[in-house]
Image (cartoon, rainbow, N blue to C red; front, side, top):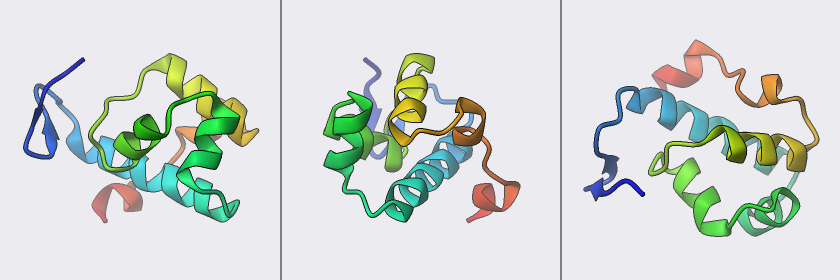
Length: 89
């Protein structure tokens, strides 16, 4: 597991992308009216992991991405398809 320095992951090359993905995931979750726990339950991912992804404190693995897409019942492509405007927020 990577160590956190402040709110950032050590060695992350694209922190803005992690932040944008976290916002995107939160929007997808909230659009369904789900709590972090509800998303964790349907995705078989821990609630702390959902929290860390949404706060850009975790660099997501392909395994977790796949579990999230299955839980949200969307194609993996849709899960990772967020606009450049999300990167700039």
